[in-house]
View 1 (cartoon, protein in one colour):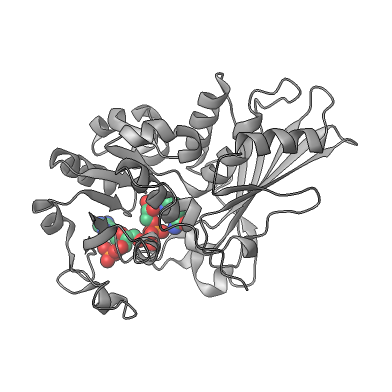
View 2: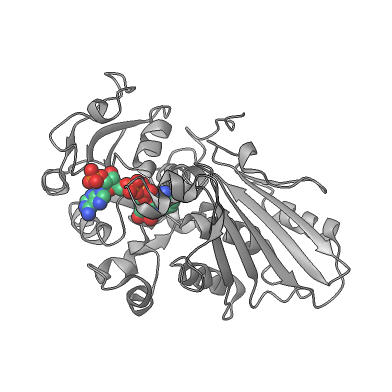
Length: 345
Ligand SMILES: NC(=O)c1ccc[n+]([C@@H]2O[C@H](COP(=O)([O-])OP(=O)(O)OC[C@H]3O[C@@H](n4cnc5c(N)ncnc54)[C@H](OP(=O)(O)O)[C@@H]3O)[C@@H](O)[C@H]2O)c1
């Protein structure tokens, strides 16, 4: 039995980890952290937990002091994760960091977008945790940087196409829409009901912090510098995220040829589905599952390719992907605990 801790157990991704791990046959959650609920039981914060699923909640300081478990999930805000990761790695735990603190290889890039890094030493140990692309490295890693939700849609959608000579992938246009849980559970004016309940708007234009992460990983995939033109939007749903990406063509190709290439790339993958012609990703068809749905079309009239990609931001975009990483890191079958179908309607 793998013994795990969840730091930030009372936030959206922490709660989603508890939901997914409660159905995992080989894992036991032995503790979690929260500032508000420290000293209480997880079932005080989440009354639907059974006695068997329950565990104690402590402060980060108390939890790190006696941590002797196998693995820790850090579902903490960026800036809070780095020092915790450093301490836990020193104590011999494997760490999966859901925050951005481990994702960027270059500390100066981190500082530009996020501010001072609290433990830059961890960056050289971190493996970027998108299993469909970095599986063999994740298996050997002690610290895995779980990807951001927008980058997951973008990287899974674009990875198979980055080196096709027919396409100009140097600067894709990325137009993304996210449900409000992507902003976390903490009360904020910008995500309160009257601000987002019936509207739909772009935000973070030109400055969203997922831009450097997408560029880092697309550059790695393409073997040359890649930039993205990224505009995220907030939509009035709790979960779900769609990215629609536009790439100009250099040479003729067809939707069926590109669909075949993407299907071939993900042939052995359990969680990535390439949709048939004329079927498009829909957040209602992936909600609660670890699936990513991808569609592609060629617009012959304008000479552009359109790639569409959808995930549940809390599952494949965060906690489900983190459990997939955990399975790889501890030598379990990668899909364990993650094969549940979407919740529909
Ligand atoms: N939401 C998503 O869709 C998503 C997707 C991918 C990645 N992520 C990343 O995953 C991490 C967690 O996201 P989330 O949406 O779960 O956030 P969240 O809902 O705001 O939860 C954050 C958790 O951390 C604790 N916390 C908050 N501030 C803290 C602080 N200063 N020191 C220590 N603990 C603190 C909170 O509990 P207390 O306030 O009781 O301490 C809570 O348990 C973030 O880094 C986020 O960027 C989120």
